[in-house]
Image (cartoon, rainbow, N blue to C red; front, side, top):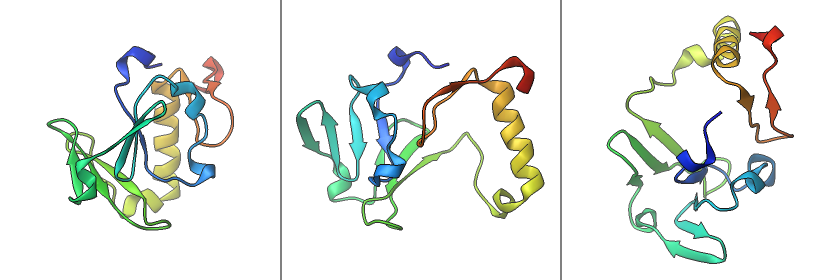
Length: 122
């Protein structure tokens, strides 16, 4: 599990209540949502107000990608591969789920409670 101290920013890619579950785990972290960055009760307008993207690091950008809501964001990483038609392949999807289960100790879903990956599933 990633230590909370290693998390610098939580990015909400959608503001829909069903997509932002478990935010209570990150109360002391800044939140980026649409064009605003929130820290506790304080909000700051970010460069996303006037630009289509925000560069977070050398390899990570956040882009405004209106979709289901006008406030949707997408996180692009140069070093983590890409999303293409293969994400709809059920066999590949199962292989990727198995890979994730083998790599992590905990899963923190947007819906429901975090849960530990038990050894029998590895």
